[in-house]
Image (cartoon, rainbow, N blue to C red; front, side, top):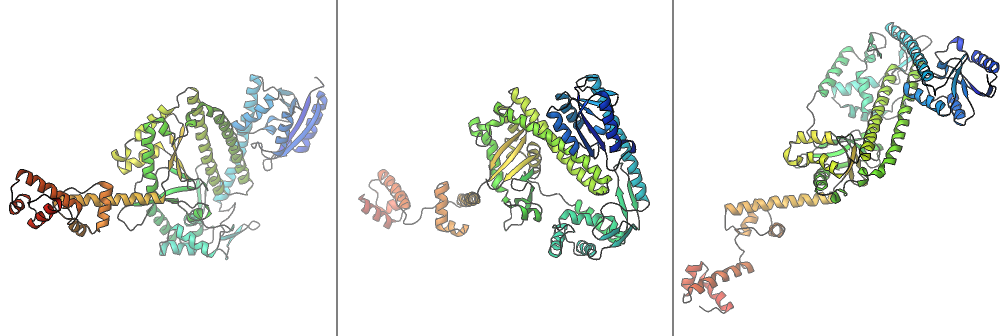
Length: 610
């Protein structure tokens, strides 16, 4: 064997799954002896006391740094599972670093060259077997946990209303916090208070055991937890739920628990919220990142009024902008934006950044994809740590499941974003993402405001624009259109100012009043302005303003003494005198319907002569 091979020694034991044959001291002695026999130069040694399913370990990170610095030719381990029991993505990441730096994996009596397909295949099989062994050990431990639970034993973090003595394995009531459950039950059952109201009242009296503010979710957890009427209940990953009665000291009765569950079920099945075009869009606040949703509000008028605001008061208090936007400030702007974008590409630039379908964005998207891949690897590492926290007894199964769901949701969102960016690059490179594709997408909602019912509007808009960002400071709602090709298209919809909305409301009411006036005049020709003002309960100046905006009323009697009335009389009088030049004042009165006294007055002023 060549004597110029540089070797890194790596040995590892796990904290809870330690195996005697792989103790650190034994591994160190055997690896050092083997390297010496082969004539290899030991350039570094690293060790970890951590799980093999975890990529982010101090010793392994230092080892990879050493590899990337080109200081080694082989990594020597007692067995490959000391190096890795990683999930597929993390294992590929580790292999990639070793392969790129031409570093091989060595075990006593065997060397694996990852640049060789056969060697890599064998290495992948070893990693798979190591993962299966780890899962087998975990399954054995989980079986033990389930049996331990069936015997009525508690484990993990206990509710704050109880004390748990690990030495005697006894549960007792925490008198300082025990009042919380009766307090919640009374408000929920007797006063019919909502979970939000209960959280508010709790915050007026105390904080949570961790010193934080109460939320609706925390109250709901207390209402649903069966431990408060004595039942130990645990749900396991295999789908089994174990319930053991009379384990916890009781803080509520079985009857109260059943009543609470009935109330929760009734509230869950209540009538759905009124339809609204923005209701199916997942809108986030640009300031705090929390959800902003549509809420119906009470108003002095008969019309329905909706606002966009944070659902939970604690969230609203923490948000710097505290959004509270009347949806009318958005609806008309959104309809206008759709119609404007469809008119021409130049007009569309008011709402859509052309770089969204420009090839110059490809390099930026490639960086984004790299970032998403790194985030994905990080989440997989976090999921590995969750299991270790559970196995160490620091977390309960409920906490494990809760955090697992959060990470799965986060992973799902990242994977969707990753897929969208990949699709976008493909479309940009093929010149298939352009203004024409935008027009094709938006044409589906070109006339949605007049063709569809409110329910259908909500469904259609929600499918085409699944997410949005509300930017209150810049008065913009950024709607993320999901094109059929799986690409997101941001559309900037301006939010009307309150002043603009007030002016529009004034104009709308003025037009309604004008139309009502014209209808009355049509039904009652010759109505005077005075009469119209009396019937419509509007003063003269208001009706005059309406005529300046929308045009003169048709068939309205001219006002006495007005210039218009004088000119009208003169026109009629001249026409009659032209046809009957010798007519007397009395005859003209009969022909024109104008008072004889007024005829004499007008003819004298105009020098017409009668």
